[in-house]
Image (tube, rainbow, N blue to C red; front, side):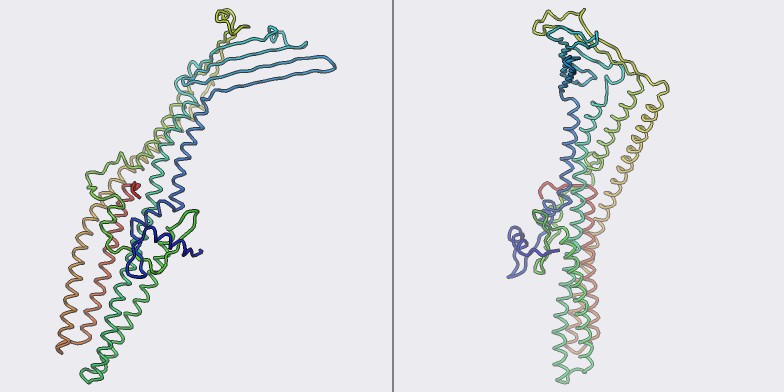
Length: 467
């Protein structure tokens, strides 16, 4: 992957807040905003809407008026065998009715007797109707109805796709934040261990303490350095994972530089960005969930298909009637005694194909209904479980905060006792190790709390409007 540092400069100049001289803060809101706007999958999700609209346009084409023109001529050895011209204008309508206007002109020495027409040609205007099969629902009607439902389904599917990529991006940001916090913890304690080592060395040189304490302080310092190095590797990896979600226009990926850091004070920003702020459990509505809406529109489309298949069990009877005239401009030239008409009857004796198609349509309908019922229960229980987990993590965050505070007090007290010669370096390092573990645990609990909020965001399938 190429590094586009100049694009990053543009990126941060637009939306990042500076800290100090060389540190830039990438806020959660700005990060998700770029993900939603430029990430290929988010942009791909927008194509779903275009697909639905194109499908609807294609289906409406089944009701477009049509002009058909047939022209044939045969001339051989100076003899005009035939010269046939037939032009038809058709207008399909909704309920299996088709309006038709026609002009026909036939000439030649060898045309069939029934093709003999007046010299100026013959005009006709009429109608064809499907009496049983196809009058209340037919292929054109069913295709258009399914296309309308599909268009609405694509809107819901778009929201699901955008929601999923924003959820994954959110988790990547929270992991990045945890890795940064862990690194900061070790940086602070490396500084403390370094200062303590220098102080122990001076005390040992002055003969105030045993020289073995220098070894113990050095081991503690090196252990902190080792853990810091591991934390920096973890931070680098999480930064690269975060970069997977950062793109610019023209599908150009961005790689974050080391001086870009996450926003530490993130709790309120997460709720606002993910638009889950002030959403109590009783405000949750399954009817507005994109997954349920998508399955609902899919179910409606399958219901149309079932009705079409059931309609094909009826006999097909097509009736056609056309007025004939040589002078279409004269209204009274249309005489009911001058006409061309016909009846077409079709009915398969065993209806095996039609009955099989109807059964398959019913199976698909039932399968989708089962999927919808299962999705409703699954989403409802998942949302309930997440709300319960969030309540628990709030308690855990409060407890771990108190634990970290108490370990800080113990370490400070132990250091004061050491200054008075009433404690040992071993106890100080032990207290400090406990404090480090508690602060790392605090970061872990905070990460789980934020991830649970992201899970709530995904379970509600929210497509943020303000990003």
